Length: 269
Image (cartoon, rainbow, N blue to C red; front, side, top):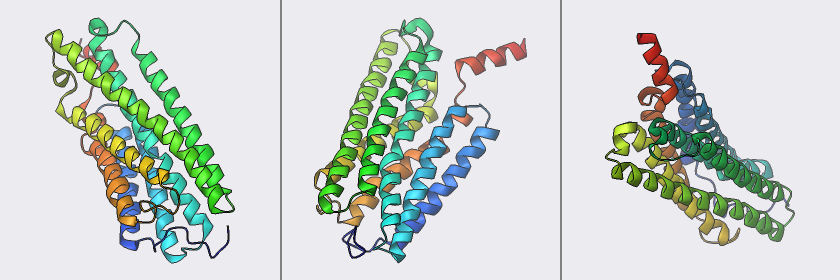
């Protein structure tokens, strides 16, 4: 696209972009430290580190754009990174839920727990693939019509992810209900820190996806797309809470899976 193209409708805010870059960079390092040195080893949490990296790169792109708002490269970096990164947070939620299902054993499902996370991860990959295709179309756009077409593909991927997350929420609620009918509380199995991490991050991903669907539906010259504070309030803040909840209430510190519990029992014996 031409160098004179107005990509944003505003000059990207430097303090917000700097905060996002530093904040998510710190969370990425914290996540890696927890994976390596945490009380409980949950290597699947690398997906959370990837989400933090993606957010840091995205806000780093916006920081670059503050200095070069007409440059196509930072625009492409920030839109693709910020659109795709929440997929990895959802992946962490899906795997954590399946670890919880493992602990409940045959009390809830006759289907092996791995089929749950395999199914959700496949859906996540499909969502990621659709959004990536949209990102490629955006990056190769030569005019606003092509830009809007690419954003429509991105929106389809986000809608697909949003639908998956709604199903996931229903599954969590169904799990809690079935446990309750059997005289067990879900909270007693996971502990409140893990529930805060899972519910908090899931709700924030839903909120963020709802905003992105509305934003992309309005087109590249729509009000939501051309007003930065919506992006900060409805994308940065929810993602900051989602990743932060997983770091503060980390499964690496508070959640012992079924496999780890058996290993502890063998060690004691």
